[in-house]
Amino acid sequence: MTAVGGFSSSLAGAPVEPFLRGTLRRPLTSSSPSFASSSPISPIQGVRYSPSRKGALPICMAMADQESDKLVAAAELEASSSSSSRTSSMSALEQLKTSAGDRYTKERSSIMVIGLSVHTAPVEMREKLAVPEAQWPRAIAELCDLHHIEEAAVLSTCNRMEIYVVALSWHRGIREVIGWMSKASGIPASELQKHLFMLRDNDATRHLFEVSAGLDSLVLGEGQILAQVKQVVRVGQEAGGLGKNIDRLFKDAITAGKRVRCETNISSGAVSVSSAAVELALMKLPRAHALSARMLLIGAGKMGKLVIKHLAAKGCTRVVVVNRSEERVAAIREDIKDIEIIYQPLTEMLSCAAEADVIFTSTASDTPLFLKEHAEVLPPVSEQVGGRRLFVDISVPRNVGACVSSVETARVYNVDDLKEVVEANKEDRLRKAMEAQVIITEEMKRFGAWRDSLETVPTIKKLRSYADRIRVSELEKCLQKMGDEALTKKVRKAVDELSTGIVNKLLHGPLQHLRCDGSDSRSLDETLDNMHALNRMFSLDTEKSILEQKIKAKVDKAQR
Image (cartoon, rainbow, N blue to C red):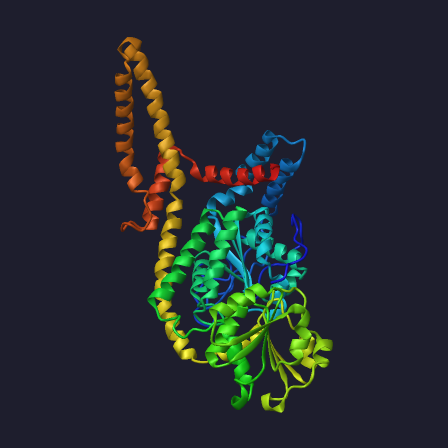
């Protein structure tokens, strides 16, 4: 992956086009978005949805309430000013709470994914948006600095670049994330929106679970994506951008991916991008001379090692490997004994290419290794292998420039061309995907129950705090009446434990009716009704309390 230039520390005020006209083309499954409406007009003012249908995605047709945006900006402006105090920051917060900002108390924070993949965008677009792993923490930090983004994670591979966020307001979150993507990549938002997809809440959850299980991969069931999802969790935790929602989402996605591979036969006979590349190369060579063709691999990373492994499995007996260091090639030679592996330094790349019929490229270089002028000076290959040198490029960004395709004696294939291999056995792939969907649905229910349970946590905390304040107050009155002479340590402890026990027993019933973790038959609606009733009876006002905590966290972060 190449670094994306132009990461910005602030996107406030960046012009962003309305979202979105692309559709998500997932070949194996699709589900109707839970937020789609039979009517094109949404209950949220200024937002229009596309009609509900398979694969339909929302279209955000207008910017939302400007007054609330001004208040959020005011809060951050006050927080960042050197002369502003915490009092002035909280003043902006109070304005937000008592004005149009109350909409936040009626809108649950949304989990969203915004991105593009091999199904929606060509490699030319994906390589411009690719974020190298070393820059994930920086990207996460910038995303979390946006007004309406609470949590963020970045999943960037050769086949996809997806941003997962928890947003205070989903339509404003969309606008801000697209603005960030546009500014980071240098691609106008109007161009980006032709290739982007957006999914929200249940649909975003299902998408990530399918990605982790290998159902959304170009090659069904491939295992590398699960390792990449695990890496997102590790990097995100180190960067501090994974809050409780996205952390749990990705961990449950990993569980779903493991279960799908263990409980179905989706991985049996499954190919990786590397093996598909080998298959494609052998398909393009004359059958009689395919295994005797001179093979060259540039790059000895994970993908490169898999190329060698699959060349050996197909019966190839020799491969030249060009790499920066010999140690990695030597380690591969120790692991794979069925093929002769010859190391050459990177300085010998062009001379090695001159003696190769098939060139596989798999490096992290952010500039092409082969351009038209390089390919033109290479000697022609034998007619026995087709008379044209094959470049099979499985890197993103590409290692072989598109201009090489114009050379008469060369043929260039990249990751998008692997679809030709993947389309084989489509019926069997669909059957395996249907088996996996049962497991994914089960894991989605577990995640949904956990997230629903979070709705009642503020009420539980507030109710306990309210009851404890009464207990402490009445306990102090009781102890004063008893007098110091009668208050031994043993008596004080007994009275304190008595009051605590009474409160716990009184709270046990109400708190049981706030449970929503999937362990009983109580529905979410019933639990939420109980929660709202308790909020009214005890004047807990948890909704504004949650809002205050969220906005205050943003203000405090801006002050730091």
